[in-house]
Image (cartoon, rainbow, N blue to C red; front, side, top):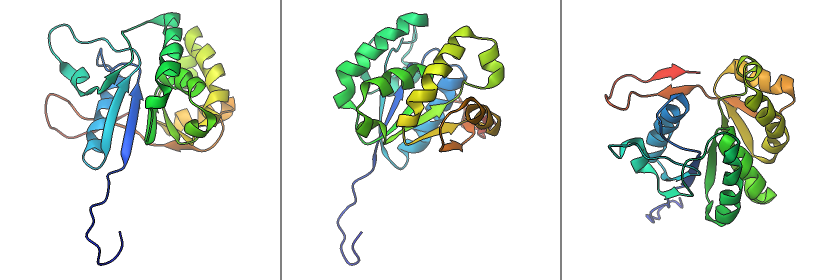
Length: 193
C-alpha cells in the first residue's frame, strides 16, 4: 500500500481444488481445516472435480463453490481429466490442488504457465502406503513427472518429503503438517500426518 493512501487492498484470490469433500475422512478433514484457515484472510473458492453430497445434510460439501461433476471411483476417475480440460479456464489466482487424484488430471489440463502457479498438497505417496496399493504405485509414477510443472509440492510430513525425494520428485518440496480441527466442536487443533 502507498503511504498516505487509504485505498482498500484487494484480497488475494485462492482456488482450492479437491476431488471430493465427502465422505469426511483424513484428507477431506485436513482440506476443510485448510479452507477454514485460509478464508479468514483470503478470498477462497472451492472447486470439486467429483463430489458426492452427504445423504441427509449439506455437511462439508456446502462450502463448495463449483462442482465439475458427480462422484467417480477407481480408474473411472480418468473422466476427471475431461472435466478439468472443460473447466481449465475457470482456475485462477493462487491454486492449491489437494491430492493426487485431483493433481494429475488438473496438471494435465492446465497450461504449463498456469501450472507454474499451483501448489500440490500431497498426502499419499509415502513408501508404506505405496507398497500396499498398486493404484498408488501407478499414480506416484505419473505424478513424479507432472508435479515438476507446479510451483511446489507440499508434503504433510518430513517422512513423506523424504520418500518423495528418494523416488525422484523434484524440489521444492515443503513440509506443512496437516492440522485438523474437529468440525463439530471448536476445540484444539491436532496435527495428523
